Length: 425
Image 1 (cartoon, rainbow, N blue to C red):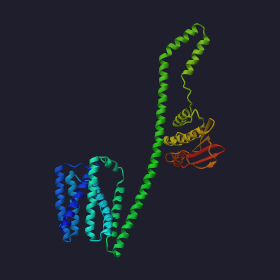
Image 2: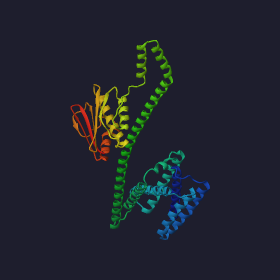
Image 3: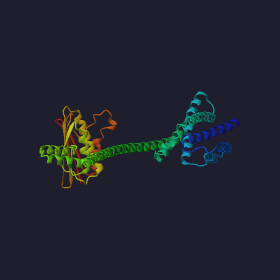
Image 4: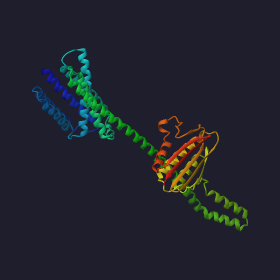
């Protein structure tokens, strides 16, 4: 029996060392000093011997408490502090090693029939030694130092549920390996299965909610990115216009002198041509829209500049300033992007027609553009290869319109795509 006690102590020391190395490797805490690390191992040796003594005298509860104290003191001494993350790493490590050792125990008993407790001890020691060697390699490579900062982004309840899941799997495997069959054993296993199922359902639901939230956030970020790009383009155009004005202001005295000279020489036609050239050079010829909404004007102007080769944009009507800027950007940017994309695929240059009107507290907007797609009604699937990152435009518009208790309708008829939205102001 003495060798079993000795093996138990060695096994406990190995898992404590492995826990300390992993906690340092993932960047939670740094080992304070070699002296403190050696002192923690001495404390571990003493307390593990004391725990085995209590266990041999059938004081299992006290032995378990000493085992918890052992881990807590070892971590505190090694790092000069004790964090929840440290305890979590130690628990995960202990449970994972127990799970692997249960599998190895089952294999061991089937190959070499013998004492169950001895097989469990040997398997646990082998697994802990394997984990220790892996932790040494991870510590040497220093590839996980930033893992802790990334892990903090994951919600705490996910970590707790994962701990619960691993714990239940360990208990299931342990009770399943135990050689004695009884009704109590079956009831315990059934209870663990029920807890495991509930935890997995909660984790799955949480995962689905997080994925949905991520998709929504990505969509909003995409819209905000477009809005920022349009604002930058708007300011760049203003800067170019200001530069033109500054240059003209710098030269206007010379221009006036030249015109005065031509008039004094009675070269009226030359003076008139000179004035005409000056007048035409001050304007860039950009398409200007007057929708009643300044952001809509900027979006239409920007999109008109980008699609000159494929389509012309025509606007008639009025857009209220009472619509939120982000929502204006969502509706017009996405709808125009889809329309421009459709026009690019058409054999001839097309026209994107937009009509808007405010009536009795409602804003109605409709947009028509040519398309090569077949007749259809409702939201159509994207024709782009990257399905995951495209096709969200119409869905984003629909969600935005619903914020205003409105409706959105889309259809393709006779080679013309039309989208109509109605929003309550």
